[in-house]
Amino acid sequence: MGKINVFFLGFLKFIDNILKPIITYLFKLYYRKLDYPNPLPKCKSDILLTPGHKLARKIRNYEITSEQVVRIYIERIKEIQPLVNCVVQERFEEAIKEAIEIDKILSMSIIPEKYSEQNSPLLGVPYSCKECIWVKGMSNNSGLTCRKENRAPEDAVVVKHMKQAGAILTCVTNTSEVCMWLESSNYVTGTTRNPYNLSRIVGGSSGGEGCIVSSCGAIWGIGSDIGGSIRMPSFFNGVYGHKPSKNLISNQFQFPQGLGMQDDMLGTGPICRYASDLKLMFKVLLGPKYKDLEKNFENNVDLKKLKFYYVKDLQGNVLVTRPSEDVQNALNKAVKFIESDLGVEVKEIKLRKFRSCFQMWSSMMNNGKCSSDAFSLLLTDGVSRVNPYWELLRSILGLQDKHTLPAISLAITERFPTNRPEHHLELANQLRQEIQDIIKDDGILLFPSFPVVAPYHNQALLTNSLDFIYYGIMNVFGFPVTQIPMGLNSHGLPLGVQIVANHNLDHYTVKLAEHFEANLVGWIPPF
Image (cartoon, rainbow, N blue to C red; front, side, top):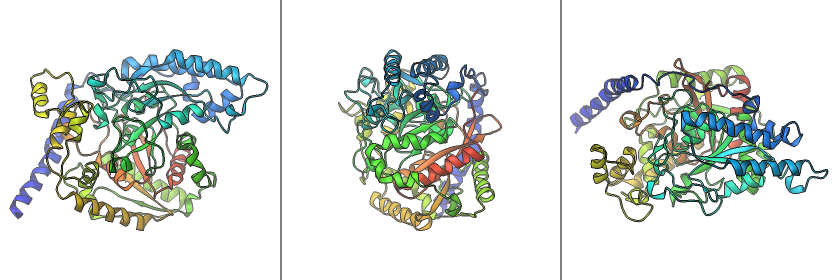
């Protein structure tokens, strides 16, 4: 058995050190005509570069009308859509009509209490939303061809909260097929391209959201995250994304809907271009629940009184890629900034159980069962179970027009039993407790983002298929996590770091994100 393990580890090192660089080079050659930075046109209006909370104030103070803002954002969407393909369905005419009505209300001598700043803090500001989240009358197919004509019958709870706050929806954005892959590409809408480099992916499954926010097609938007689906696109697109604490923001009315343990892992949250907008968006998406956390957010957090820790990697986990030099440098930069700017020590922690984090995540996704065919059922919208081997053959023969190769691959792998799920669920509980014992109620943990910068289109299936677990492990724990940008690498691609805190301490991670933006680096335009 020892010889077999040595051979297996040697083979994995060969893949990581030799085969992956060769594959990456081949993709670089294939995409050489698209492989250049800053492909997007510059913004024609400074309104597009104004944080959302400031836009809301300008609209309310009559410095600009909601109609003007909405029209400017619509024109920007029309400008970027042919390049990045992030929009599934727009509602431009309706958005303009809603903006005109809001301007009429704001012109009244006495504004109804319903539209006061306290009750409608986002009044007249446009936003976008991930297509898998229900918006009444809008597309809701999540990249499935069999759901192509499906329309949401009502608004999701978070969409209702945005409406009540006065925000105006302009469009819904692209996802991966059934929201279960790290590239936002499907046979309904096509492939969404990275605004920093059109040959690169935007991440998934909220990739359309990360893309449109970074491209200045939206100031902010709503995503969902069960394995990094807010944070990965935020990383690849150089913006801010927040996965809230477990069961804090409503996940109701999405497709697919998390079941059992999956719903505990799923987090719906904001994607913003500016960290200064995170708090306001978080407040709105929480709805009435915000009252329970209001003291946390309204009281000033003294970052110098917090304790800071960091994790370099997943402790020799052989299933995933080790963080690249770029990603390590971003983490080190964050650590050094905290130490120099706040005058506190940032301690490294090493926990061996991180080696089993993929098994923990998959055990929870299967609701503690050894195997599942739930994904095969989802691929037909619950009508029947897809035969993934037949679909794989269709892909090989070039006849595939329904399912992406990553979706087919997942349908195949789910048929193989998970080894000892009960053991890995218990292991997850132990690791969660170990981390909580360290960070307690006054600590923040810095964690690597995806181990490499945004891969080329279609590359990740060959080189990074399990690397989402750098994000997914935090879904297992239910901790709040804010993904922050940390500048660009030498090729102009975004870098980033995850900021983690204990349950219901979302204000810690948001506050630190604001501090980084104000004093170190924030979103850098892809043009």
